[in-house]
Amino acid sequence: MGAGPEALLDAGLERALRDGGHTVRTKIAEIKGSWRAEIETSFELMRMLATEVWVARESDRLPIILAGNCNTAVGTLAGLGVESTGVAWFDAHGDFNTPETTSSGFLDGTAVAILTGRCWSQLARTIPHFTPVADDRVCLIGTRDVDPLEHDLLEASLVEVVSPTLLRRTLGAALDSIREHVKAMYVHLDLDVLDAGVARANSYAVSGGLTLEDVEYSLAEIRGRFRTAGITLSAYDPAGDADGLAARAAIRLIVSAASPSARMVRD
Image (tube, rainbow, N blue to C red; front, side, top):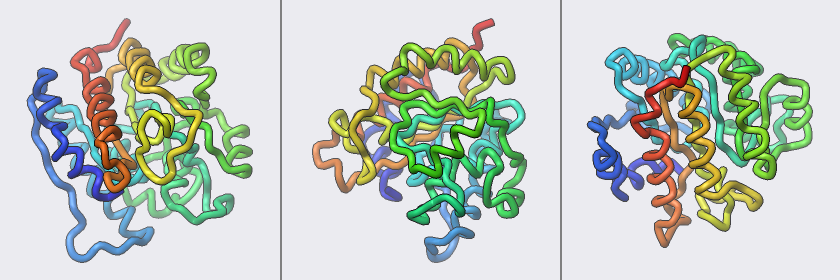
């Protein structure tokens, strides 16, 4: 999935954004030296992103992060301003495991748990501007593949979970609840929120997910209530996308999320 960001650029993302009326500036964020697939390296990347996103925000630009993994969201949200920003987390998975509940040891599966202060707290404190986000400012959208112990953690939390089957009945109320606390939203799009039959984003894709129209409906609901503070597209693996269907879906959703109206707030 680390090849996903540059594959999306090659597939025409910048052109699509410019066609949508945006001025686009692209910067590659890379760890210096050889890449080590370990926890500290992931947090090093989060620290880098926190600084880069903060600079973009201070320049009144809309940060769009193309990421191979979901843990980058911790640095992104830190750069956006945790105290003033809610989280709309589109993902097939809950990403709410901790080191004590995970059965796979997959660090990406702890992303929302880190955001809400449930684990890796010492390393999270090294990320500039990061503080845990309150549960009642987080909404998981399209989530359907959750581990048993992870499910128990979610049940005990104040995080809203909007399942695919109840999306159009319950999303509005969940967003209204978050709007009681913040007027800006971070939109995190893990591409496997889509049903595997719509587009196979990666090897973790599962059935029972959202259609493109479901995600666009959700993004419109978000735009109607919040200013979009930043956007992430994560977990796209081009190796499994021979027909380019998932890349086209990713570009379509990024352009939708970055619609000029996303900068506005409805009073």
